Length: 111
Length: 114
Image (cartoon, rainbow over all chains, first blue to last red; front, side, top):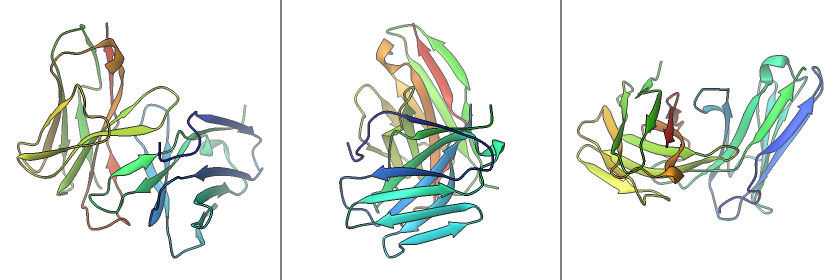
């Protein structure tokens, strides 16, 4: 597998808290995509970080990429109930936009 | 807005039967993909296509065929459905202009093989 973890992780936090999700990958990539999947829906891109970027921000989202350790993280600041979803990281092979997904993190915000 | 439409949204199939999942995109994208998602896991690439009338194998093509009759349409075919093919299937498209390109996904088809 391209990714270090094989099973879906689960996190449960309270509204207003910050949260960070981590991914590690095994082979070279030039970009890491972060997707969000809501229940019953397909994944939707929320942030994309390239290998020449160490950090990328979009609203309350912050992605990091460390090519030396082959790892990426997604942080959400002041989480809200609507942030409840499954979050996936994915590497892009570079040709044909073929994505290799990690197992994902199921984030629950609010009871 | 980019749109990828899958049909049916859910299907129950009999073991050994033939199943066809259909996908239609209005994004004018050259690249289309079929992914499979098993409960608690990420998506895995089955087949993809970068031009009409041509398909390529992805990471897990065994037991699946694909057809791309036009730029807009991409089908996934299970000639002999098996229990292990119970999963959610996602179609996607992209313009394939590089690794910074967003891939747009449909809502998925839940296939149950009994």
